[in-house]
Image 1 (cartoon, rainbow, N blue to C red):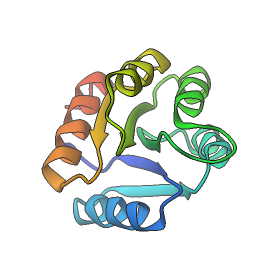
Image 2: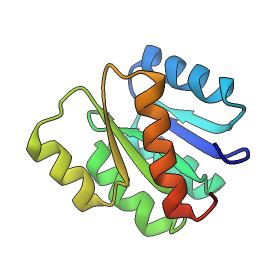
Image 3: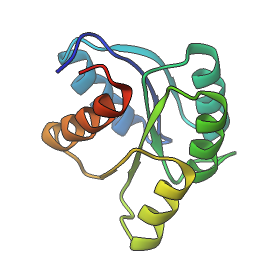
Length: 127
């Protein structure tokens, strides 16, 4: 793992946010903010310009696909990891078309999360 990375976590499920926070905290990363809807996720990303944002697909106000697209438009250096329990081909394809760098299926484990982070780190050229 590289040095400390900055993250934003967005998921309407509090338990998912808690698990991600614990996984990232255990790896000594910094959480810049957490959101329970897509609009707040976008606001946090614009304000903090995190290295990586975890974005759930099914969120109120702004779904994860639209949030990902707007984050990538406004935060050129932020990599997006889309998280969803609905890993249909259509959802995965839409996530990547919106600008996601990785897709993690719920329920996830630390290995899957770390693999997605490593993939993003390569794109960030922080390795």
